[in-house]
Length: 297
Image (cartoon, rainbow, N blue to C red; front, side):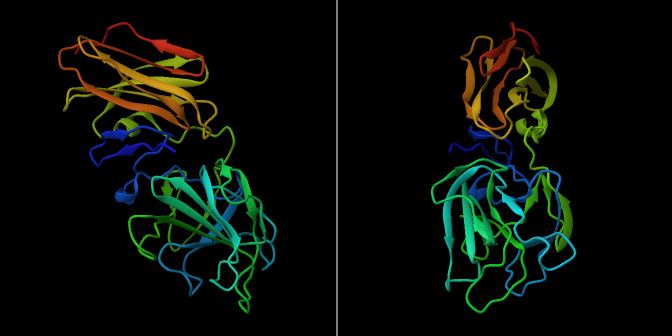
């Protein structure tokens, strides 16, 4: 999986499947994926990080319903797309019981523990929102627990437990130590990224064009750096990797293009354009937009 990596000043080093830096993310592990709550769309779940003595930092136990067994068998879905690297009952090794671990690329992974049922096997490629299991109370022998989902986000930039990260859902950090959160893990959900956010601090939109109904391409300008930026934001097939591109051409210079199968957006592509005209555009599937040379700053 290719990953969008942004340095602290917002400059893209690599382009990929719609990842972007969030404040406080573990930079050595790469930008944080666009995680959603690990439950179906519009379900409300109460998360708590302090009820269990086993918790180490930012882990969360999720429940809903008013009785101990109310959640037993409820669907658990992937918080983001990735590859299943653990699908196993941990036996006596630890207290996780039936565990799914998903590698999201860029050094990020999520853990889903105590599952009653594991619905995906080792090495499966899963999409965001895909069912991966059911809420349960499996654990190690002799450890009797009530049904709940134990959820963790980890990175590869430190050793356990320092690599456990705060959970972020739909772009908002979980309200530790406890909060009720409504899932926005929805098919056809709005794109969680905006053009100015993708291009970085100091950029503002100066023009845009629809690429059919599939995407919108944006041209942005940063007056402080005299740079233009172009990004194509998907409006359809959000969260699934589909063909999309963005390009920027400063008059008299070579065109800069970012293209591939991305989940959320293509770009950002940036170039300095003081007192220069630019040509810009992008594509989504078989549709595209190409500007003339314009916006001569």
